[in-house]
Amino acid sequence: MSTQVLIYIFVGLSFALYIGIAIWSRAGSTKEFYVAGGGVSPMVNGMATAADWMSAASFLSMAGLIAFLGYDASVYLMGWTGGYVLLALLLAPYLRKFGQFTVPDFIGTRYYSKTARVVAVICLIFISFTYIAGQMRGVGIVFSRFLDVDITMGVIMGMGIVFIYSVLGGMKGITYTQVAQYCVLIMAYLVPAFFLSFMLTGNPIPQLGLGSEVNDGSGLYVLQKMDMVLTDLGFTAYTAGTKSTIDVFCITMALMVGTAGLPHVIVRFFTVPKASDARKSAGWALLFIALLYTTAPAVGAFARLNFVETVNETAYAEAPEWFTNWESNDLIAWHDKNGDGVMQYRAGNAFEGTPTFVEGTGPSGERLVSNAPVADSENEVYVDRDIMVLANPEIGNLPGWVIALVAAGGLAAALSTAAGLLLVISSSVSHDLLKSTFRPDISEKGELLAARLAATAAIVVAGYLGIYPPGWVAEVVAFAFGLAAASLFPVIFMGIFTKFMNREGAIAGMVSGLVFTFAYIFYFKLWNPTMNVADNWLLGISPEGIGVIGMLINFGVAIAVAKMTAQTPLEVRRLVDSIRVPRGAGEAHAH
Image (cartoon, rainbow, N blue to C red; front, side):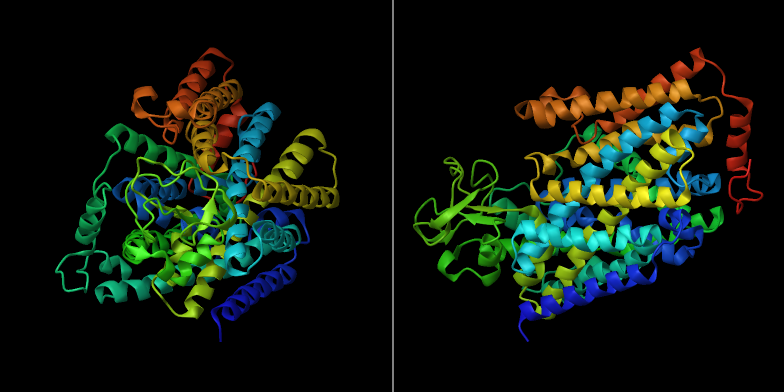
């Protein structure tokens, strides 16, 4: 059976499973739509949380970043896993005990203010759409490569699948669909890693294989060989760091507190029966997440090593099939600068900017690229970092069923997070803006209809951003984490652990942290990217880490304003006390 047929079978069966689950678990009430009825078991919720957490960024991009950045990419591992621990220990159980449906619900009630609720909704929608654009683009790329359709059609197909199980099933459908998606994506991630680890080192466990000797008779360990191979080609050593200590600290911290403030993950802890179950599900989720995150460094290292050995000094006429496959999808490019017909992979850029392909054949048989090649660089090969996990089985010449499994896994990762984000957007519009702010008299049936209409509109917008991504979509991932760190995290944290923080302080803090962080990232990433170098950064902190300063501004402004304005009402102070009282932790908020 051909690889292409296997891909159709694997992807088709996984989609049939997701749609079947959505129909079986169709939401019939707002509580089922928003929080799956609040009766999900801790282990099931932990698995669904892990799928929600591990987006296309974790499945596709993280190993690609590790493959090409080496040691510097450790900030993503530390930040994203540390953020989850922060969320699980500091926020999730208390938010669950509070008993509301959404993050803006908590902020609006805790700070007794519709304005605070609306500001939180604006932050949340901006963060969610930033995130979801990348997910839909990832879906389009996977469809394009593996199902032989163009990216636009791939995005539309993904929109259709997400529409069925998020609009029909709500959180109830999404929860059980995400359990299935976790099983698919973790198998798709681990199976190729086992194969590649065994092929390169003789040890099938990738976490151990990364620290083992390469079985090529050289006597070198994997990381030693990586350093030697890359430095010979002019790259920085794989195990060497190039970022300053303060920037590493700030990026890690921004990712931690930003991730802890991401609303689509927080809402998962409202689906369990009681606060103690929120803690248990957090523990399960950490275990399920660790399976992928501890494997990612090995996957990245194996992918880079295989890539270099397969591509460098290989005649283009004899290039492996996987190279021409990805080249036809505009994600790898080669330009024969010296006219020898051999691909030279070196440090430096092969082209000016991201290659744009044109029709026709180059002088050495390669696809023509409209971008001018960089004349003073010896590098002739461009590769999109995001393809490394998807291309890994092909580069390693693994069986067709493994390639098919990875295709299904990539789609599962992107779709699971997209669905969670869409639900957050729809519940913010229907519950927080309509029911809690502008239309408090709306019926439950009307609210459920509004939620479904909002989810449908969100899918259309997300699909548009996936089909016609602004040129800066890849760059604004920093927006999601920076804005969550600077806007939502401080007010959630102070709402739980302080009684003095009032509505004036919370609103002033959110707005000031949001404006500063937005302005800093916008200036360096979009307005004046040529200035985006360490010498021009505030205190040497990159745009990816500036959310930490935004967070500190939020805390400082909020505390100062709270000290100068009216005291928090007595009933709100009692509410804060009740959130942290251990006794009766299983009860929903009834104060």
